[in-house]
Length: 240
Figure 1 (tube, rainbow, N blue to C red):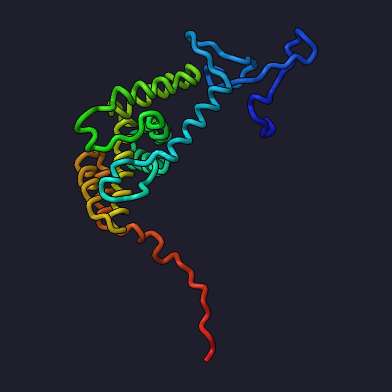
Figure 2 (figure 1 turned 90 degrees about the horizontal axis):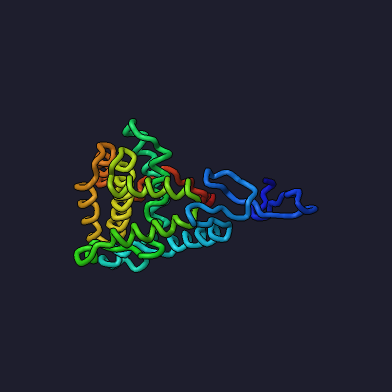
């Protein structure tokens, strides 16, 4: 592909000299030589893919709203949460031994996509209304921008996470919660003691033995401990 953007690829159709049509990804995720793909009345184009990717950027600006309740002025974003949760999920899957780590990561990577459209709901707001239907609707509409193969797989992944119907779904949700517990511990250690409530709630919620062991050890560990012993002092004492 020579590093070129996908829609800059063209081919000769044979109907006209050097007639050009843009390449695109087909329903199986392969590059094909059609300007558009129609699937069940839906059309996926490079333009729709571009807009979808721009929409994902909103997750870098969408914060987790619950942290405002304890006084955190600039809470971590959804994108930051997903980044660490995905790696936690991979680790949990390996520790559990009976799940597909790559599938767990894929589930986590897409599970909060709907928050680009509906925002993040904290647990106080959840007392008054459920955003479950809205989240499903938003996620479903988002995936309509993509190919049938992607759409079906991602919708299945979303359901696995929300319903915890498979081992991968259970692990993905545990990783989602566990990341929040780690974020809470960082806030506790930096002067927000009320964040301990998040840790307690996650400890009660997780299902896998690996997640339970990790959160128990995390409670007793300062969040800065990881770099102790890694520092290399560069100063030199003056000769007397």
